[in-house]
Image (cartoon, rainbow, N blue to C red):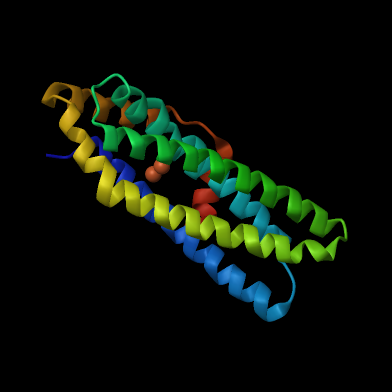
Length: 178
Ligand SMILES: [Fe+2]
Ligand SMILES: [Fe+2]
């Protein structure tokens, strides 16, 4: 049977591709001693629209929300809280990256190191986070839902994706695939 969380696992693959691009950009910056501000703008757009609004939107808005109405065991509960905090931390890091990039563009070249740190934080954060969700959280959590609830969740996920009309999202996904 196809599970709703399979969809989230598939979306992780695109996020991990973006993470790989970030890793390559870190190496570029280290080699060239300069930042490519356009790349950072596109990365900020991707993590904000795809990873956060589109992907975390389903995790928090549907999966976690429905789980929180279940009698979860203490360890699953703890992991869900950690995952939520990591989403918040990712949001903050992306906003800091956007600001650092603006400062860099306006001539404050000393923000280069800050940008490098923030990019490295994003790589580390998403790799750990996705590993946790894929291998330690999503599938064990499906035990809390009946077959009927699982089916309904699948429909909610598909509807969410279909109704998602963020233009930035479409552009960034195309850019990433190009
Ligand atoms: Fe997540
Ligand atoms: Fe995720």
